[in-house]
Length: 125
Image 1 (tube, rainbow, N blue to C red):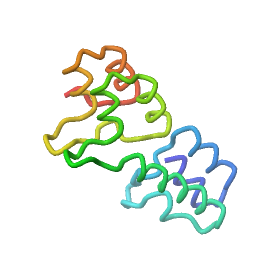
Image 2: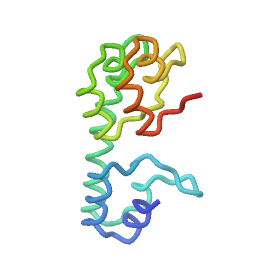
Image 3: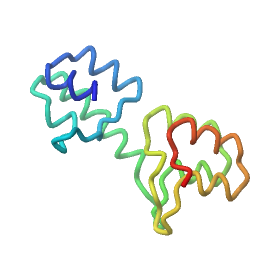
Image 4: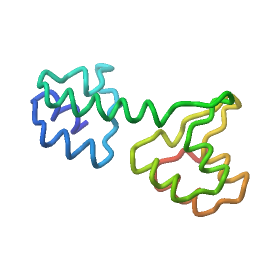
């Protein structure tokens, strides 16, 4: 990915731009490496690690395996869902019942949230 390339060449400004624009810091390249695995530059490492820490916190789960995005979709909180998606949370995370946030949006009739999830790459199947 472009983030892998920017990390491997140590272009911290580019890494920062890509991360702030929503690049997937957990994406794997063809060698099964994440962008952080290719970083030698301390500034790049700091940027990517900070985003990973933020996402790990946002991806924390309740006792049913639901993330903050699952809960926002259940509750119909489009502002919270949009904020989480902008921060790069996983649109296709599954809970203990193997339900994604899109399942909950559809079940509760939250059309605008469903549209938002689809725009952010939610799997409809």
